[in-house]
Amino acid sequence: MASFFERATEGLFFEPDRRPYWDHTHFGVKGEHVRIVGQHHCELAGLWMPAFFVPDATDSTPKGTVLFAHACTRNMQFHLPQVIWLVAAGFNVFTYDPRGCGRSQGTISLTSIVEDLQSAFSYLKKEKALDPSEIILFGQHAGAYAALQLAQNNPSIAAVVLESVWATQSGYLLNRYGPGIGHLLKALCPVQPNPIDALCRLTMPLALAVASLDRSIPESEQKRVMNACPKHREIWLEKGARQLDIFTRPSEARERFLAFAQKALQKDD
Image 1 (tube, rainbow, N blue to C red):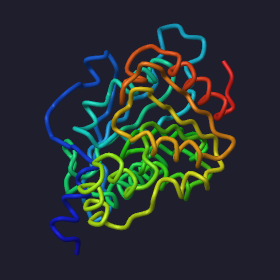
Image 2 (cartoon, one colour):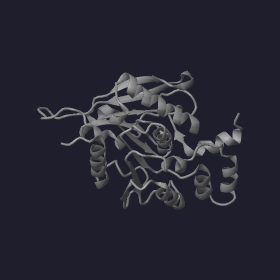
Image 3 (cartoon, helix red, strand yellow):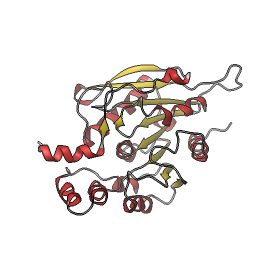
Image 4 (cartoon, rainbow, N blue to C red):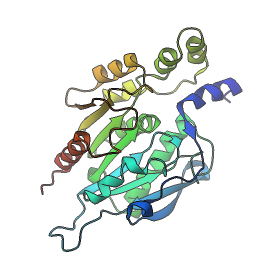
């Protein structure tokens, strides 16, 4: 059983809340709210947004499906601008709230976010009859941590896109909070798999989106992540962008995402 101080230290990786933010209807997008029965019988809130096509489109076949694991700050409504543009680009999008976020039950932890992403992945395979080779996995910050754990055990996933991922939990705490406090937090942090260990095992197409002004990940951690990535990875550096700012507006990064996903899915316009 983790101590109070260990749970408090682990909580530094998350900032969940249950407040309402954006709704998919604000963007003129259709969506279906679903409930996922996660591990330990916790109910998770999910949102399925089918690809949108203009009337009389010559091809109305979805290009693929993006499974989005948000940063575990606030909830999935807050993060809709990160992915809703993909719906208009011809992709189905499925996002969800891990435990402790939005309308999902339970308490969030590094272990639970991995389990909850697995539950969302299983939902897509069972309820939407999707093969992993049709799924692009997109994770940001704590969601990127969960995405790496899922991806290393499911090599048939079409591709992975990551943003704001740290290298190790101990390195993140030490370098973000500095000597003294950082050393104390490092000692209190529960032992969990590190992203850097999963990175080097990935065999599917991998892209790392890097905001030049991202202050949420210490620079030394960013360098360790980039050095640990397998050689086949792509790195998208967005100059002048802050954390979670790369995909919220039309940008070169969006175009790179679309080209990367389409190539991974082996579909041409």
